[in-house]
Amino acid sequence: MRDYTLVFNNKLSATSLAVMEDFESAEALAEIPLDELIEFLVAHGKNRFSDPETVAKELKKAARSSYRLPKAMTDTVNLAMASSIRVIRTLQEQIKSLKKAIQDHLDTIPQTLDSIPGIGSIFASGIVAEIVDINQFKSHKQLAKLAGLAWTEHQSGNFTAKRTRLINSGNRFLRYHLIEAANSVKVHYPVFAEYYAKKSAEPKQFAHKRALALTARKLVRLVYTLLKTNQLYQPRGGYR
Image 1 (cartoon, rainbow, N blue to C red):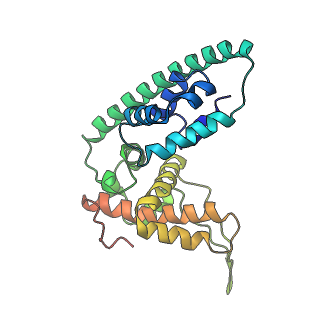
Image 2: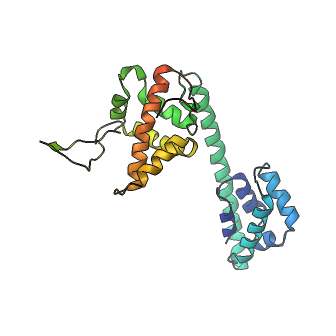
């Protein structure tokens, strides 16, 4: 079986698909000279590999240790693989076209969300589409409530519950886009990365889910500010 493609982080990348398409067997990959395989990876990876020699060595190692199919099954498996690769490439082209169409439409809308590291045209368009008009909100708290990123309050007399849940109401599509955007932003924005790490380290149930929801709530303030003022993201701005 072609489990040697596990070497790639993205199993559906152009290079991974090229390896599956050009090398019909593990033996072919294992026997190709190392320098030729390096050239192959550089060409199909468009020189994006920081260390193509190491990748080539890992591929050859994985190919040598991969499971060998009986010869009677090889042609059938190769045919199925080739068909699947054609379908994948077609879908990738369609996704590429859709992303361009979304970006072209987004360019006609006054918004600055895609200036935030980690928020591309997909997240930005989804958030803007669900908010519609930022001026209908007087504060980021109202926006958070619309997204369902607000917490219930349980209070009786002088007692306030420490465990609360997200409200059940709100726009679930906006909440989805904000949470997914927060998951991406925390990778690119140190302030959000630190905040997420702090919250996920707290001894609470469902730590990741809770920390991500809180990070999305923090992102709401930034989204509200940028849309309300129509300003671009500033790396050292006061969005804490």
